[in-house]
Length: 231
Image (cartoon, rainbow, N blue to C red; front, side, top):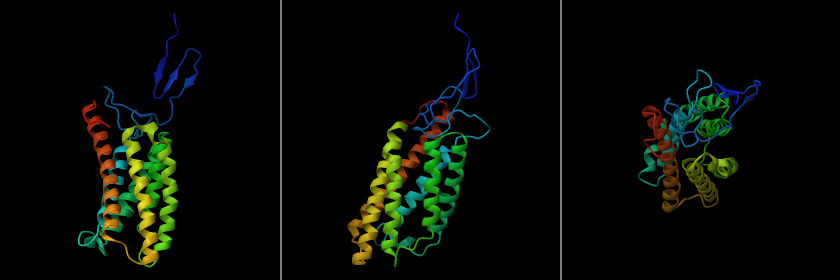
């Protein structure tokens, strides 16, 4: 008779007491036990007292990204955000602080992909709140290019974590390309056309909507302990 295997948290103890850990950051589905589910989001099964940070992480990123996209729309739509202090404060607190905390929790729960992504983008939004893009367009283009490379790093591995995650980082990658072009052209010609504004704002809004949907699907599927919304 084969020796019994006793489950203890994430570890599976065999007959000789050897512990086998599952692959890090595997895509999780909803279980009958009400585990957190997402399109590869961190933490479907708790190894400690911390809940999954994927819901608040994805929602915080989605809300901040949509707000940034709205602020990049052409006149008269984007003008409502110019000089309005709520945008940088939202980037600093919701996009920065909340994402940093979500990233730390994800790394603590041994989820390298989402922990690194949340921490990285938390640092981006927290610092971007202080970036002046008006008189320093070339500098802003350089910062955007660096984060373009950062996004590419996660895009390469995103398919491993589900289609929703892949499209999130694909749209984010395209958004960063457009942002580099926008700032570079703003520095060279000191003007950006309305169509370019629509392209940049539209892609960033779409990116935020994807993140919002993934966070909403994560929470909904967890709450009902079954896959209600596809991811």
